[in-house]
Amino acid sequence: MLLRSVDVLVVGAGLSGSMFARELSRLDPDMDIIMIDRLADGRFDRYHRICGEAVSDRAFKELSMEPRHVRNRIVKAREIWPGDIVIEENANGFIIDRPAFLRSIHDEIRGKVDIEQSSLRSLQRERDAIIAETSSGDIRCSNVIGADGAFSTVRKNLSSDFPRQTIPVKQFIVDQPSEEGTIEFTYGQRYAGGYSWRFPCGGMSNVGFPLGCGDLPLNVVEENARFIPIGSVDPLPVSNALLLGDAAAMVNPLSFGGIRVAMLSAQKAAQALAKGDTSEYQRWWKGCGFSNESFWNAYQVSKVWDDDRMTRFMENFRGGYGLLGLTRAMLKGGEDRMVAKAFMHSFRYGW
Image (cartoon, rainbow, N blue to C red; front, side):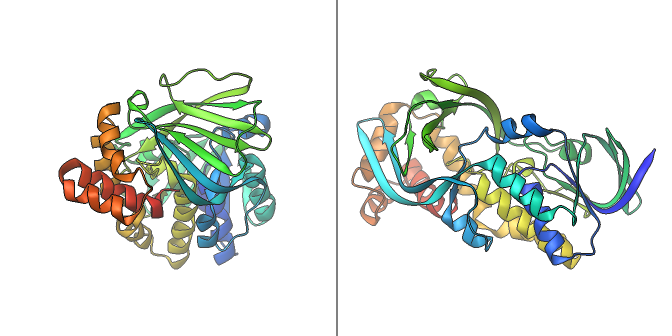
C-alpha cells in the first residue's frame, strides 16, 4: 500500500540523519521530508549512548552551531603507549549527552520534518523515484538518504559495496570518576590497531575497547556493544540516493572518530541536494581530508605491529607530537614515514 509521496526520505534519526534533516529544512523549507528510525523511546536512547560521545570544538564551529547538552569539557588528550611512553596534548572539545543532543535536534525540526518510528524493509527503483517499503507502509520518494549505520539497509538495497572492515567494540559506563577534562587512550598489540579508551561521562567514566581485547572494568553501570565501519564505501549508483556517516563507513581508521564527519557529511549532502546537484556531495567526500587514503594504509600497517614495534615507532614522539619527532620518523622512511604522515594528518581530521 502506498502510504505517501515525499521529496526526501531520511532513513535513520541518529546524528547524520538528524543533522541532514535540520540543514535541508533550513535551506529549503518547502521540501517535504520524512525521517524514519526503527528504534523508539528507551531503545533509541540506549543505542545512541553506545559511543564515547567526544566531539571536538572544531566540529561545532564547522556547523556554525553552539555545543548542546555538554556533560564535560575536554581540554587534554593522553595517549599511553608500550615502552612507558605517555604523550599529553591539548585538546579542545566536549563530552555530550548524545541522546539528549539528538532529541533537541528533533524538537527543533518537528513541524518542518515528519519524524516517525518505522523500519525500512526494502527499496525499489521506479523511473526517477524510489519506492521504500517500510513497516508502516510504502513511501514514494524522489530522494533517499541512508543514515542508518554500519549495516545500512539503504546501502544493501542499492549497492553491493560494503565497508572494508567492521570492528565490534564493547563499551561500559562505570561508576568511577575520570580525570576531569581528559580523554585517555591506551595502545598496544592486544588492541589490534585500535585502543582502549577512558572518557569522562558526567561524574562517571565511559570505558571501551575492541571486542575481546580488554578486561571487564569494575563497577559497571551499563554495558553495550556496537560496530565501527571503516574504509569507506563507493557512492551509490543512483544520483537520488546518498549515504552519510557510518552508512558510508566514514569513520577515521586511525582515530575511530566518527561524530564530526557524520555531522559534516550531513551538512554537505543537504547543501548539495538543496542545489539539485548531489554529485557535489560526492566530489566533496572524494576531495576532503577525511577520506585521505593514508589513514587506511597506516591502519593496515600498524594493526599488525607488536608492542616492541610500536615502542620503536613511538620513541620518535616521546617528547610529544612536534616537528622534531615527525622529522625523525620521516627520515627513517618505510612504514615509519607512512604512519607518521597519517598521524600528523589525523590531528586535523581525526575527531
